[in-house]
Image 1 (cartoon, helix red, strand yellow):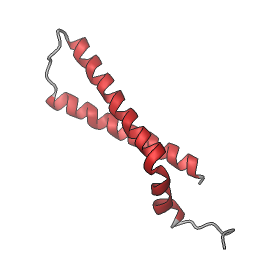
Image 2 (cartoon, one colour; image 1 turned 45 degrees about the vertical axis):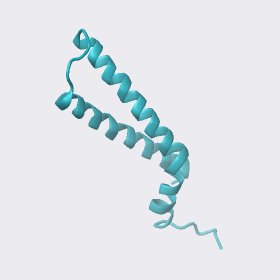
Image 3 (tube, helix red, strand yellow; image 1 turned 180 degrees about the vertical axis):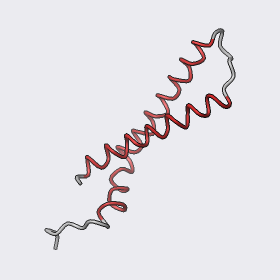
Amino acid sequence: MEQTKFIKKLAMWVAIVAAVIIAIIGLCFGRVIEGNLFAEVAKWVVMGLVIIGILEGFIALGVGGIIYHFVYERKHPRLDQD
């Protein structure tokens, strides 16, 4: 598997898990502070997108290559390397 494909899959799963965790936290511990429920849900959605965006940037630009190396390349070494 190529590194870019691995990082895209990793980023997708990080986004899915983060969205589920944010939704659970919002449902369990959320309080209606805004004037109506729509504004409260919109606030949680925007906050979730910001958090997911930060995580995606961190995974894709920061540690995605390192995770690829330690998880995938060590189990599947390339044959063309000396």
